[in-house]
Length: 193
Image (cartoon, rainbow, N blue to C red; front, side):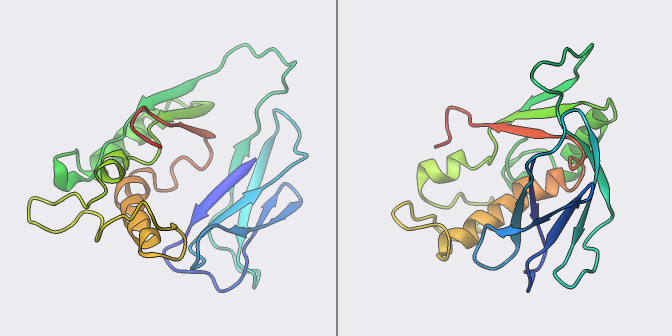
């Protein structure tokens, strides 16, 4: 199980994820400590686990939640419900539906209790990267807050800041924590690289 989390502010110490009695230490995935991932192995198939996220100090970072692992490869299930969708849209300043409406649509879809979700076009950034220049708001402000430099590294450069701003505006504001009990798969579309 791979769990990825982001925080509004950097964490000073490594967070810990408890999964049904197993402790998994966080691995930082950015340069500031706002993004972390947890990779848990040796979990039982088709098992519902309670997860809880703690700071290095032991303080809870959020309320516990549940997540079920997939059945084993040999198991024959009677039914499976998968939420398929594509391109949740871009920034609302470019004419896309407001994030609140898209989030409400996701919450409605989740009310049908899908076993997993699958989205084509995970980062919603294709047009920004393809053009290698900031998309302009109608008001003239740069969507990405700067220019994404494809010749530079991402982590530790201005590219990291730009990528986080885009992700926050186009992903975090839509998904929030609503999918944390629903396994998600992101499949790149033909315009990502």
